[in-house]
Amino acid sequence: MNSLNNKPSTKHRHNITYLQEWGQWERKDGYLVREKRRYSFCGDCGYRKNLRSEEIETVGGNDLQMHPINFLNASEIKIANHILKELYKSNNKKRWNSWKDSLFKKWNFGLVEITIDKLHMHGFIIKRKRKDKTRINHWNLHCILFNEDFMVSIESFLKINKVKKQKWEEVPFPPLSPAGLGNAKILFDLIQTNQKHYNNNGGALIECINGEKLVFPKSSGNAYLKIVRGLHGLYQLTLSERHLFLREFSQEFFGDTKLFSRNDRDKVDRIVGDVEKFGLLQSRNEVLISGIFEWAWNGEIGNSRAIKNYLALPRDMVSEIKLTQWQGKKLLIIENQDLFISVAKGNVLNKNEWIILFGSGYLSAEEYTIIRELIPLGLQQIYFWCDLDPYGFLITDNFIKNTNTNIPIYLFGFNSNWFSKLPVYKELLQTDKSEIDKLLKEDIPFQIKEVLFMMKETGFKGEQEFFSNFLDRKTFEKTILIESIRLI
Image (cartoon, rainbow, N blue to C red; front, side, top):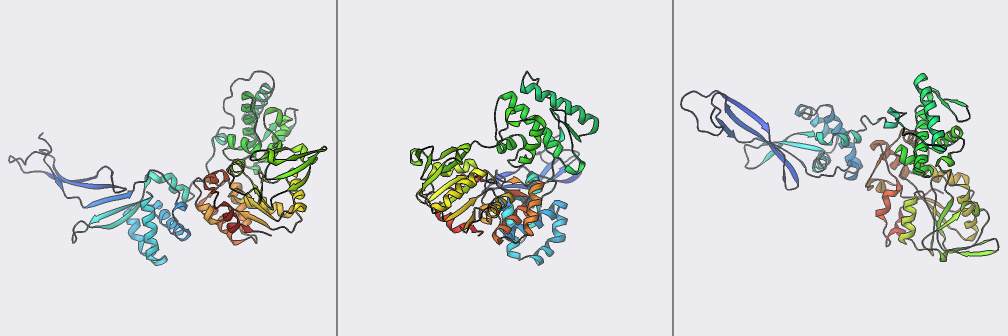
């Protein structure tokens, strides 16, 4: 057979077939571009003639897949959801031709065009264009398709197949490394015993160390699996001789700081007798606080000026000390420890004006004690900075219900602007979704409802540790005062 690019043979009439195929993606001016190559081909002699390309595809060349809520506004998100949902049903030109007219009737043409352009620029949508035969070097939009390389991101945005079992739900009893003696052996035997129960009855019963049996009804959902995972987590802590508090334990073994709750911990405590001896600490041993203050204890006077950044007060000491002087008039309660430390060490707030307290979720009796002592010392305003999830508002609301005070209480960092600029998002759990639905029915500030609605629409929430990079010493205090939402 002759070369593909040889001259036409004069010995026979060519048996011509016309073929076309998409070429490789090439980067041009920030976009990826590929041509649909057309050529004629003789099946007898191999003669091939390249024809002019009449169709191209383009898509944004960003390597980082950003979530659409990071580059679309609220109106554009609704349009993007509609477009991607329709393309997801059938990713071909017929789908585009059949519904584009109705799309332009439903929304403003310019807004639709902007949304498509943004999705295209960030890689979610491919534009297929055809050569305009009446104008030189001009291509007309023929159709749009979703980028299948962005399938996971698109399904996440559309909340498709979002209920995915985690590995610990699919394999409740993974193989265990052999245990030695002591607490590890106790947990090893306990897990093995309950694995036998699981194999016999499919996961409805947990046997405790003392022989008591706990029954989990089918209506309890994955409660049984969470307890089994908790036991495996304790076993791993015991083998490695480590200790974790509840949030860290939940993050390490469940992938979320709130998935393994205090109620779950109490159940595990009932099963093993004492979770602390197996590495799961009941609560933090200190109250972390930053500010300028003095206290009296056992006849001695303490001064926070002698401590750099923040002070860790032992919890069993809090009820015994008496706060005698406090410099700041505003209290900022931060739910996340990493963010608390970033604020305290970064000196982004004036310590003569502010007190900073680490809250770690719902406040404990010790934190309430400190706040009650601050009030007669001139405390004027209380600000909560919680995770961007439904519990962030619930934590603040719980404090209001349990505190009889006329001091103004604010919620900071809980608006659509903060939610939109989060660099990292976490998927909502079913418990999160249930709480959001409840809150949306209540009479709460519209700014909070707007964020909750965005969570529900996108299927995502945010946690505070991701806000560390947003701290600006020059503007942070002003931002708190301007953007906080007053609740009472």
